[in-house]
Length: 180
Image 1 (cartoon, helix red, strand yellow):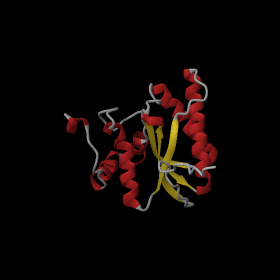
Image 2 (cartoon, rainbow, N blue to C red; image 1 turned 60 degrees about the vertical axis):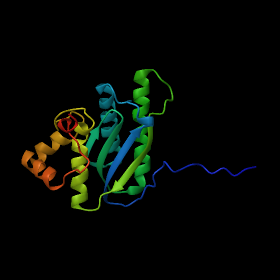
Image 3 (spheres, rainbow, N blue to C red; image 1 turned 180 degrees about the vertical axis):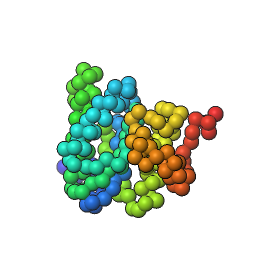
């Protein structure tokens, strides 16, 4: 009998570090737009809030798009991250599948995580999250419904965020105007 090794090249290694801020990206299978229409983004958001409460994670920033999401989370016990992600993706898949009348369809592929390594790293990821809906042509401004941008404006003010965008710019970011 032949020894077949599974192909894990598309599965990122997950590092674990307690009391850290994690940048997390979850992507749908083959980039399909499972989070469209907007009501499906709401299903995902409601599931996210539920799981954040259950795992006692502090959400610092988020954005939910048609085929992926980004999170910045303060995580105390890094050993719980895999379970959190499994429950978040599993429960949101089940709820979306229930609405679609589909049984057992897998929606989410694996997830990518990155441990934030300082203030500059934090703010570049924060800016990336908040600018992502523009990058993906879902809106022309930063006030996107399924993003934490509005909460940051209320908490820190527009001038603070504008300064962050200037100070920690995103190199690969394009706006609608750049594409015209």
